[in-house]
Image (tube, rainbow, N blue to C red; front, side):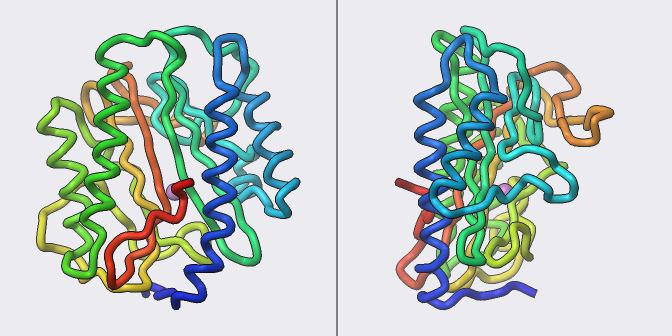
Length: 248
Ligand code: CO
């Protein structure tokens, strides 16, 4: 069952979503060679609590951190670590908070200094595929029009779509119905309606689409060692079109 949100509820969701956007921007400015993702995690948790919010991921199914920090060939759910970030790395940061009973969720991928042409292109294409997907989140469309918007954009540019992880509805829960795959056929799936709020999150690989989860039970990596990028926004569907709640 998809829980529709009233305009008033969407207004309440703006608060956690703005907090997520602000803190991700702050983190982006802290990312440089020599910094560790654990430092970023601790900064994010402090800034979350300072704003009267709580980290959404910490404690979720036993996940122990505020951030997911997925480095290079890590796809999603990478754990913050003591390894110093280095020039040439790419780092995906996924972050959610809960405030006043509502969740916000977003992710960015950031290059450290000069990265390979392929890495830079992967990041650009992944972010642009999210824009393309958001543009499809209108009441004229169906759910998999969003999915197809990601897949067609990404595959036309030589990259591949991860199948094992998907976006999701969001509201009073971090994960609500429906699942939002990043692949699918246009014109299929449920009709999109004003009041749906979706976390749209393309996870895109440099080479093949296959991923596996490490023995830590969380970290997903590419099977072929290629890089992976991830961008996410929490988006409300309104009668006027998509409203990106996690945009500053
Ligand atoms: Co999400």
